[in-house]
Length: 480
Image 1 (tube, one colour):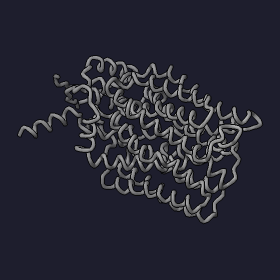
Image 2 (image 1 turned 90 degrees about the vertical axis):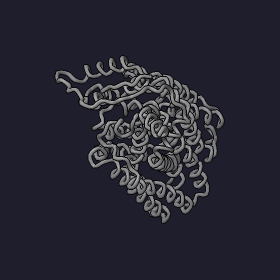
Image 3 (image 1 turned 180 degrees about the horizontal axis):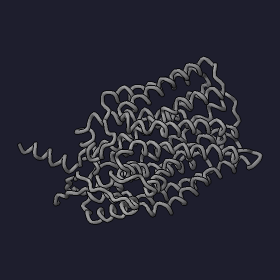
Image 4 (image 1 turned 90 degrees about the horizontal axis):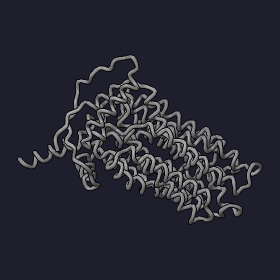
């Protein structure tokens, strides 16, 4: 195909922040809110589901629901990322949201362990598919100078869903308000309502001009950018960017080329991305999916009061990326990623030791987790930011999916593993689990010092060359 020269990426990057960008953030960032809501609901109701009046699950089965959801998300990310890069970001938005809503509604109708495990897997399929499409679109639409902060803030909005879920649990799981076998079912309705509502907003989000460009749809890409510019410029005249990019559309890309590019040409970035994703995924999956069980088993916190402890925990996680996010664009990715990972891992090890000594109570345990995850949340968000901006545009969605799937898949056993440790009811066993989580955060932090990518305030095309340019360069090298 013919080579295309365009200024579209740089025209998007030089746009002033506007209400249109806020609309994009709300319409697409809701995915993280929904995911946070789903994880919180399952985390809070896990102890309720072990009761004879509900599904009468064992502690291991209740913990496994988190694993089922994660496995569904991994499969969804892989399958739908290919379709996202092939058919576009926008077309997959509604499909993924529809699958999520269906899975959530079905979860509310579960009648035994097998049914709820299956429905949680379906829900995960929708959310996993959303991750690759949403993160790709956000990075491709947000100006480079604020991409780090916006990405972290959006990823941190996961905890808005957590706050909503924990607040609702105080009401819906209160036996004085609803029968015990009804409240947990109603909890799932909130996610379905939010999912349906956001479909109306997403109609106004355009297809990514960058995706259109690399697929040879230049006129359509130009038209979308013009419409965006008209919405954001107001009375100020936008300057014409001096830079341009040269791209040869190469059509659809398969996972074979993705793996060859990511783990061949970008081997160091791949190693870093895997460790960042796996470390934060293990930490969150291990701690959060068993949060209510730890509070109820070790600190005797009633099920209908667990939301009171989750709410401050969620605030710490939300404010971390929000407050620290701007430093990822000013001080830089390398410094901030390493700091947030190393600090959170070190604090987790220290808190685990205090738990082992038995000197914590429900309040001090929660306070410690708030401090730990203030830093861990910013670090975890930066893992998604890293894998979404350091690989070529043509394979962005599939690259995100590969790292999400491998990293999350490797840590999907964490809820079940911690559920097993909880079964012994021995603080010493859980302390071992905390130490493993701490090491899996500290090591990627150290690794970032040496392998980190200084992507702050740079266009995506400057961070990673277009795949077509890489292929042309390799062909020329082979011909010599």
